[in-house]
Image (cartoon, rainbow, N blue to C red; front, side):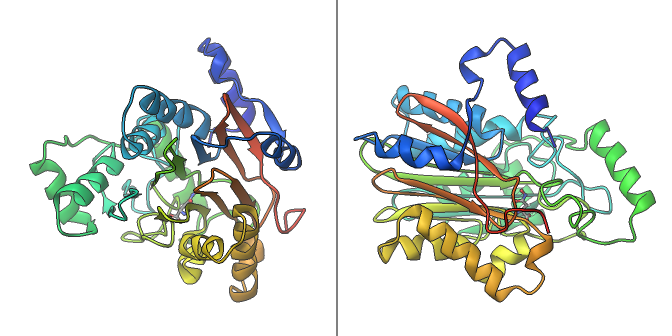
Length: 335
Ligand code: SD4
């Protein structure tokens, strides 16, 4: 994972000064949002890499692209970054050394597409989009998803970078085939899925979520990210939510759908994500050892973020600023 210091150094070294994030704590965000009268367009996404993804999504909107183009092209950025070890190229492999990808996308018309257990394709989000746009289905998996991608002109590529391979070999040496390696000690490591949500100036909403999933997972394991309602959910009447962290806990509570339903019933995005985290706390006995974070946005452009453990951050692009924010968490300290 690229930690925050490394990330800032990288961005600064690239001379991309406009991308250097202001890092602020979640407490200041409420004041920042309340002082604004117009909250849309807004783009919100998970983790450090969200800054560059938001920037790319915003550029699409500025150039008159659709909200679905914006979320898709936003998450392309971490998908094609070999240094990002949780998404697309360079993603952590499973315990057999294969990089297997999950992705999902939803648009304002309520349509959805996803792929899971997809190998060899750098941009699974675009395959998910094609499933959404050009098939009567919502989800394609594994070999079928790859076949569909190849028929439609996607090219196969080796996604296992030397660095990820080295990591895998080290894990092989030290692990006892635990599919959740080290998470008890490092709950924010080995997972940096990007979930990106956007609302355009018409109030139309879309979302995208893409990941290589849990590093060193069992072969064939699929997480929450490609499951509509778990890793991502969009309802154009209400808002959208996406999740990061241990997908098993999100799947057991259908987290993103839950967040949107809380918003439908009148909660703000912040109240909604906090309730969804509390649901996991109440329902999943093992929850203290593992991280889950949600971000959410409603049709008015209000946002929310919350996690089980500290260490989760997200990027918020709104009102001319693109800032990295530390999320509040249920437990103030790592358990
Ligand atoms: C998964 N939720 O496959 C994903 C992993 C993740 O940040 O979010 N990492 O369980």
